[in-house]
Amino acid sequence: MRLHKHAPWAILGGLLLTASVQAEIAGVQFSAETVSRGPDGQTSTGKMYVGANRMRVEMSHLGQEMIRIHDQNRQMEWMLLPDRQAYMERSAPMGGTAPGSMPAPSAETNPCQGIEGLNCTRTGEEDVAGRRAVKWEMSMTHEGKTLTGAQWLDVERGLPLKYQMPDGQAMELRMLGTESIAGRAVEKWEMTTTVPNEQPVQSLQWYDPELKLAVREEFPGGFVRELTNIQVGPQPDELFTVPAGYSKMEPPPAPPR
Image 1 (cartoon, one colour):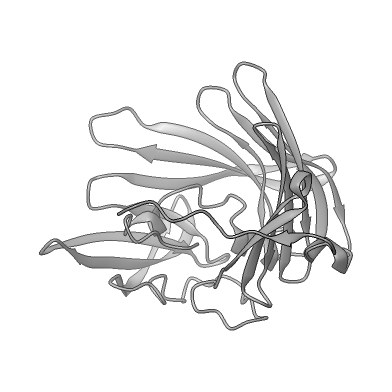
Image 2: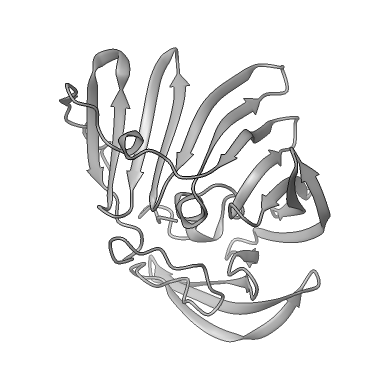
């Protein structure tokens, strides 16, 4: 997970079992179709291909086809625009990880490693919703103030089970049991997110231990995101390269800070 410099606590937030780049390319090779459905019934579809430390996602945005390729071996990312036979590229290092390597997540790995200005201290082990977790206290200085928070990493998986942020926001994951989706054995998890002065918000995720990502997510309001037609197996090299004949485009300038 990459940290935005204007959101120093973003490492603690988000959907922590969802398909982040690191989770996707750390698992086995596979292909799948992606489906997103809104509460109004509107559906968008795409495709995902995961190779050896490489990933390709095909999608459509505002009627334009787009393809994103991430190559951890080269620490590069490309955005292809097939309609224009063009592409953009950028460096995409993964938190100081050496090229070509993608170690499995570990609760003993300092979650602040490689993140400037954020410090983590291991303070012991605790139970979170019946699972053993390593607690890491986190601190940083912002505008002259020291901000503190904490996150608990699952001993078995190394994934965050719980976090508490300086502003009172909190998240906790709880495993509800095991189910089968399209013939695959998955774990059903409930995520509860709490914001001060608001009611807790709950969402559901179905985590595939073999693929190391969530294959289905249900959010408040009726939004659903899932992977279908999952096919496990090696993926062709040509899926993860820029096609011949494509012209390189310069990326748009960064917005003013």
